[in-house]
Image 1: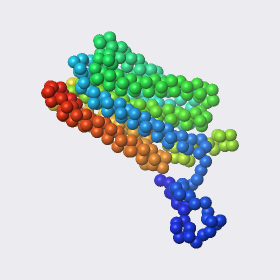
Image 2: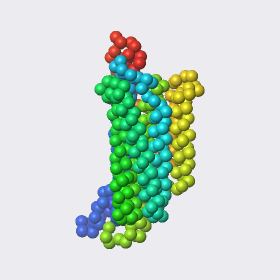
Image 3: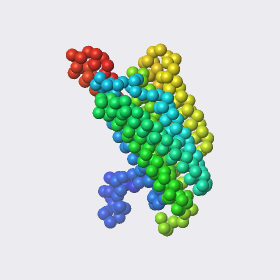
Image 4: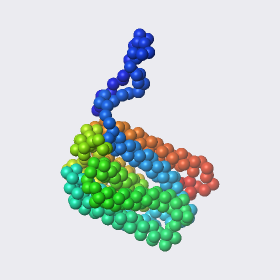
Length: 223
Length: 129
């Protein structure tokens, strides 16, 4: 932990010291080792705060799905429409993509450009297959008549799972952007910083998926 | 950017305790193996029905999910009390509290709303939640 010092001298000092000699009172905590935020001092923490607010967005959507999850309106129930083997496949794909991104990060640190690019490409392909399986699932549901308009449960389901799929799609686009940037400039510090943010994003999406497959699919089928 | 050399920037990146992406081969592998187990068991519990009681199965599934989220947080997201002076952990815990309040609170309120507002449709009230 970093040490913090308070530069304000307190009321006694204020009373005795005149205006001119008072050394720039600071009424907030000042970090002991002050530093320039050059490469990415605040970036990673800032991106982390974004991810946490994204988690709250997901919390709202999870809550509305939870509230609507038994509003079938006479339509299909989870047990009738969910295919768990397909969900297990998708879960496996996303989990493997998490570790392949980890390998990309491990190759990035010593600056192995080719290896980093290869693992990123593998991750993007796994992400694309995840989205493809999800779109196949959505397609077959809609073909069966289980559309988002059918019931509150299905509206909540498509919103939650679709929102996650949209995030994964954004992650894939970001991976290809990073592949282009690494291709042009190599593993410069700015690109390393971007990859760290992308890594947090990707692993975060896997964490959200744990919530999705548990609360939507597994508990849905149990209900 | 321009006044610093690249080596300085790299050192600076590390000096800030920006340890997010800096997992080890070991942490990723351990995280992956634990995640496979914590994913496979709940799927097996739901698909093979080794436990007859659905409520008990659901409780197990939720516990496994919570454990897996913890594993991912530590092994993949590298959240610990050291990174960024502890602020990532702080933000994470704050978010977790808000998340639980939002989800559990919504379900609780809407469950009671349903059971109190629709006494004429007992089947539907019993089904809610």
